[in-house]
Image (tube, rainbow, N blue to C red; front, side, top):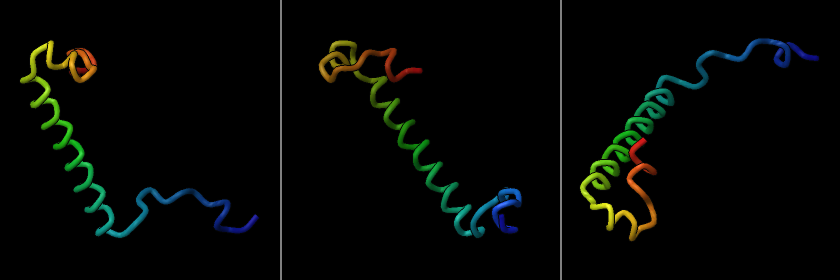
Length: 60
Protein backbone atom coordinates (compact mmCIF):
# COMPACT_ATOMS: atom_id res chain seq x y z
CA UNK A 1 0.00 0.00 0.00
CA UNK A 2 1.46 3.32 -1.06
CA UNK A 3 1.50 6.62 0.77
CA UNK A 4 -1.34 8.12 -1.31
CA UNK A 5 -3.64 5.18 -0.64
CA UNK A 6 -3.28 5.35 3.13
CA UNK A 7 -3.58 9.05 3.87
CA UNK A 8 -6.78 10.91 4.77
CA UNK A 9 -8.89 12.55 2.11
CA UNK A 10 -8.40 16.27 1.55
CA UNK A 11 -11.09 18.33 3.26
CA UNK A 12 -11.35 20.68 0.29
CA UNK A 13 -10.59 19.31 -3.12
CA UNK A 14 -10.08 21.69 -5.96
CA UNK A 15 -8.89 25.19 -6.46
CA UNK A 16 -10.68 28.27 -5.14
CA UNK A 17 -12.09 28.70 -8.66
CA UNK A 18 -13.75 25.27 -8.50
CA UNK A 19 -15.16 26.00 -5.06
CA UNK A 20 -16.70 29.24 -6.32
CA UNK A 21 -18.16 27.43 -9.33
CA UNK A 22 -19.70 24.76 -7.05
CA UNK A 23 -21.22 27.47 -4.85
CA UNK A 24 -22.60 29.31 -7.87
CA UNK A 25 -24.17 26.13 -9.27
CA UNK A 26 -25.72 25.35 -5.88
CA UNK A 27 -27.17 28.85 -5.73
CA UNK A 28 -28.59 28.55 -9.25
CA UNK A 29 -30.20 25.17 -8.42
CA UNK A 30 -31.75 26.68 -5.29
CA UNK A 31 -33.02 29.65 -7.29
CA UNK A 32 -34.59 27.41 -9.94
CA UNK A 33 -36.33 25.29 -7.28
CA UNK A 34 -37.63 28.46 -5.63
CA UNK A 35 -38.98 29.83 -8.92
CA UNK A 36 -40.66 26.50 -9.62
CA UNK A 37 -42.32 26.50 -6.19
CA UNK A 38 -43.61 30.05 -6.77
CA UNK A 39 -45.09 29.09 -10.15
CA UNK A 40 -46.67 25.91 -8.78
CA UNK A 41 -48.13 27.77 -5.81
CA UNK A 42 -50.08 29.99 -8.20
CA UNK A 43 -51.78 27.02 -9.89
CA UNK A 44 -55.16 25.75 -8.77
CA UNK A 45 -55.66 22.21 -7.48
CA UNK A 46 -57.31 21.20 -10.76
CA UNK A 47 -54.38 22.57 -12.79
CA UNK A 48 -51.93 20.66 -10.60
CA UNK A 49 -54.03 17.51 -11.10
CA UNK A 50 -53.89 18.04 -14.88
CA UNK A 51 -50.08 17.88 -14.82
CA UNK A 52 -50.13 14.88 -12.51
CA UNK A 53 -49.03 16.31 -9.17
CA UNK A 54 -50.74 17.32 -5.97
CA UNK A 55 -50.09 20.25 -3.70
CA UNK A 56 -48.33 17.99 -1.18
CA UNK A 57 -45.94 16.56 -3.81
CA UNK A 58 -43.92 19.75 -4.29
CA UNK A 59 -44.71 21.80 -1.20
CA UNK A 60 -42.52 19.81 1.18
